[in-house]
Image (cartoon, rainbow, N blue to C red):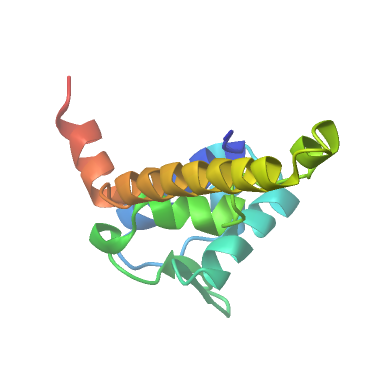
Amino acid sequence: MRLSKTVEQACCILSILAEHHGQPVTNVELNERMNVSQSYLTKITRKLVIAGIITSAQGVKGGFILARPMTSITLGDVVKATDGSAPFFRPTNLIKQAFPAREYITRKGVKLLHDAFTQAEQKWFDELNLTTMEQLISKAKTTR
């Protein structure tokens, strides 16, 4: 599993929004602070809005604000919002093709592989869901 750079950028956006204490932050300000293209920022913020992590405020003083406190936004939430929730492992039937005379064993082998990856994926997300954005920010501020 390889995470996209969008995860780090989304965490950065959330941190910027948090320091504004409920005041909207525009894409222009995000662009100036992060030096990321406007179109790419729009894609990231849209994903965060769809996931219910941030909201969009329209109008002259519009922009983005947190939809919920950083204490309730986990790394798992950010990963799912930015990189999606498609399963890590998707069988391609290669094992069945490689061992055509052993249908029962290959079917069982594919199931065992699928189950092992599904279990590992669940444990990974469980671990990510233990860490909130607030915890990360607090550690960053106090760690030397």
